[in-house]
Image (cartoon, rainbow, N blue to C red; front, side, top):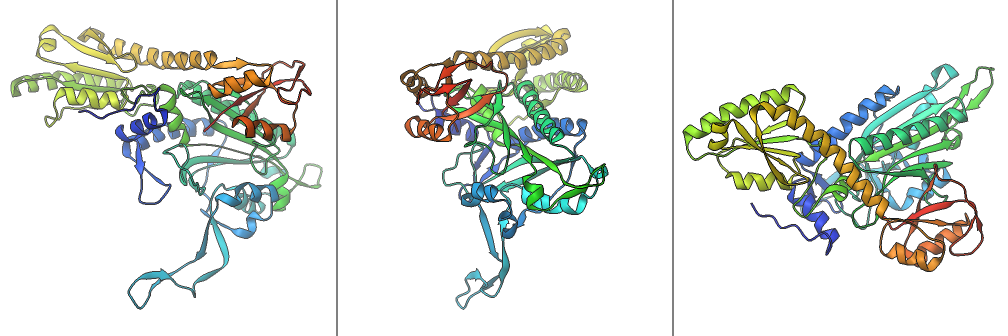
Length: 489
């Protein structure tokens, strides 16, 4: 097969879209700004869900589901929250259609809702209205709920996986007795995300707090993990929010404390989305197509026979089925492509494009010599392996590839992280991509001006960075810590 992939250095945006489309991850739908996630792309999301869901449950969280429709009045109860989402909300105003005299389907003007419904952009409001009924006493706390759902944020400029009007995610919403417990929860999830994204997606991260301008609408503090893509732009990979008592007060959620007083609960919320598939593509892939870390690949190994006659086909398939059973028994996800409708060369290109970590091919000569041909996707190098070494070699290659992909991306991040002390150097580095550490005076107005001048935003205020005296790159005012700037998706 031959599917053209744009040159990554010449047109990164087209390269990204080519991989998404040609690797059969997703495509644009008949609804403007919305995507169809195809089976292969959804299989990657399912692998993510499985790993994350296990981590959530191991830390005491349980899954629930809340309505996709939220009464408009709920949004007005938390002022900063409605300000943050007002321009992205899709609104339901009527509940029925009818045919007009010409036979066209139109909205029934007599079926207007008494109160408009917002299609869920995030669930804080509907969940906290529910929590008011669930929480009465300290004995009901902590309440640790997660839901897997879709959300709608009406985007004007969309890009598959990175920014669509509808996307899939998980959102956790927790309630606690004390401020310290809620902060501890928000930080715990931050590091849970970091562990998941680095160890499963093999994507290195920076982490810290968002600035006042960049934090979640309605939060006291927003914690974030940020990744650096191959074009030098940052991608927000996940966020965890300490909500204080804002939503508890907005929805009057109180509990009888251990001392017998009525107190407002403390809250957190957190989430990651199908945007992570976009991060995966932009971190690891190359001009040949998708490159998947083995832990996330729907198929970790593909088996492809090479033959010239039915007799050869039967003999090779018999042996490859034994290999498949042996690998599967070790928990390795195996794809048997024994179809006779496509030639081996077509299949090689197909699975290279789809990023399958290991390809094992066998022809008549291999069968005679008790060997197989191994190709590791990220290196595209061939190895001839004996039958007796297949399982050990496969396990070793999968582990090594997972490790190497992370190290390669980590080296890219380190080589594209810069520290600057003046605005000229700052502008130069920002325009050439990467994470830029610079002093900032802490003023939202200064942050706004830097964004206006360079299109760069503060990606995070590092939690693990040492304090140091310095001068803001724009205003020259005192600063106690460098923050991380970048252009972003």
